[in-house]
Structure formats: structure tokens, C-alpha cells
Image 1 (cartoon, one colour):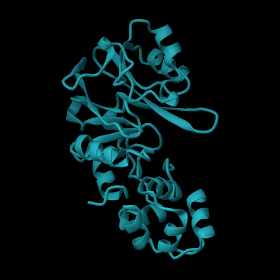
Image 2 (image 1 turned 30 degrees about the vertical axis):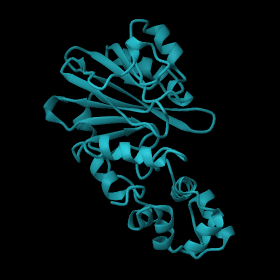
Image 3 (image 1 turned 90 degrees about the vertical axis):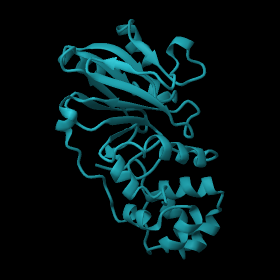
Image 4 (image 1 turned 90 degrees about the horizontal axis):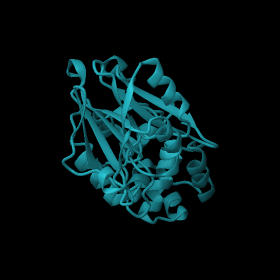
Length: 275
């Protein structure tokens, strides 16, 4: 299991959002600029930087940042609690993206969250589990999250599309009080812009057996990091605090890239959140 963002990715995102030069970041880290640039590029360092001063300059949490540098990973998820939820990872030319399929065990009604690059794994899971795909929820319309939209809508022409995009038809656009029922499951939405203007998080509740909720967050939040939001980082973090971190601690976080995590783990270990 690897994080979506290594140490250098986190530093680069935070530095650009804070409008800090590489020279200033290197000085704070007590590194040469060459050493600092290598750390941003690779995520590794030959000499341990001054994390306290660097984190302070970039608006990061120093202890959490050191945890990432020292190899923190989210604890393995007990997938049995979410036995009707599947993470599907497909690969494009240079990176992978996650989408998620959830269904009600009794009715066999299913919902897909984003599409990934390739529709075939979705088709296979639907067929293997004898599901009826009823809904398709889009976290945001960046190409990697909607690349397989055409094939999926072609195979399942009756699927209902849900999106927060301003370009979505009115009958497909998310509204704050929408509650979509999928058998015994309930799906609601919360706006989480910043990385993308149309960013949305979907909350799946009422799992059989009273399991915790799950939140499909797109690229708003990753395990140990967050999606790039160079000019809107403040807004992105505000929406994460308001709409994701207010969920119960055991809530499963289903990100658009990288491993599964939980609200509790991100509040404790994500260096972008200093409180």
C-alpha cells in the first residue's frame, strides 16, 4: 500500500498554496536549494530537514509531516463492515484512479461513484453480483473520474446521473437536501469544492449491521494529503473541516486516489490540518 502523495508532493502543494519560493523553503528546512528540490521531487532526503520550521512556513502540522516522512500509512480497513462496497482501481497512461460500487444486499440495487478510466471492471462486478445499476454519482468532472462515462451510460441507459457541475442538466444536479434511497441505504451529498469547482462528497449511510458511514470524497481528501488546490487551498480545507471531519470518527473515507482511510486517521495524521 502506498500513499497517493509522498512527502515531496505534500510539500510542493503546500508551498505553492502559500506562495513560498523553493529558496525560502530550503532555508527554513536547513537544506540547500538543490537538496530541497530533490526532496520535493522524490519524497526522500539525504539529510533530515528542520521539519518544525518548514511546516511552520508552509502552514503544515510538523508532527504529522514528520509522520509522513517516516512512513505513516493508514491502518488496514476491516472490509467486512462494508461487504457491499467495492473499490475499483483502473490505470490510465501514467496514474491510477479509484471509483466505488455499492449495493443493497436485498434489492440488489447498485450505485457507482465516478467511473475511472475503464468500465470493464464495473461491468464485471455488476454481472458477478447480479446487480441493477440505478445511480451514477460524480464527485467532480476531471477527466480521470468520468473517462468511462460514455460506455457505462451506453450499457445502462436508465442509470440516473448525479453531479454538482453547473453544466449538469437541472434534473441531474445535486441539491443540498437530496436523499437517494438504495434499498436500505441512504446517499446524501455535501459540497466540497477547492480542488474542483464542482467537487462533491457523497455520504453512504445505514449499512446493514449498523456499520459506520462511508464518504466518497473524490479528490477533496487523500490518506495523508489532499487534492491540489493551489489558489483555493483555504476553501478546500474549510470544506473538508465542515463537511468531512464533522462525520463520525469511524467513517470510511473513499478517496479518488490512494488507499482507504477514516475520518479519525486523517484528523490525527494529515499534515494539512494543523488544529
